[in-house]
Image (cartoon, rainbow, N blue to C red; front, side, top):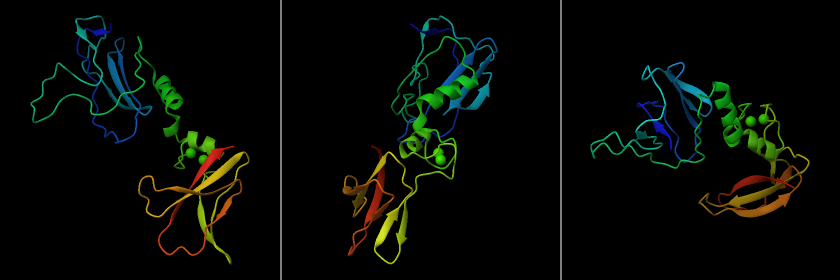
Length: 204
Ligand SMILES: [Ca+2]
Ligand SMILES: [Ca+2]
């Protein structure tokens, strides 16, 4: 069982977004007397608190997501983490920053967006766009020529596109309007009220 000898606290006040997983890593380096905190692969805190930080066999348990040694007044709340914890890992050595960045890139590829075009590397892989070229991105345009309104996008070989529509954007109100392997979809005529569309890219 993991134990720690003296309290090692790695704090940071960054805001954690609701309803999405973040990749958080705390590193305590006893040899260098440092502690680091990483969020989504980036080091956001570096400190020496306490200066003689050590993680060793001790008489207190190691806790993740709560601190039973800190008693808060009921009006303040609890130290329990209000959220889910997934894929917890513990190392017996201090990870280097490159290793933390690599772990994040490997495990959380749906949030890695190397070219900063707003679509993750993982989503670009599905869409067939280039994850290191910001000008290559899946983007649906609404066009009006002589004929009916149409949705248009750059098609990619090996992909099919499922067009869905909704009258209200309410949860679960999407229905499939059509499917194509081309880069265009003609919107049906005669819509009297609002209509929303979205296009799902599927690997054939
Ligand atoms: Ca991207
Ligand atoms: Ca891209």
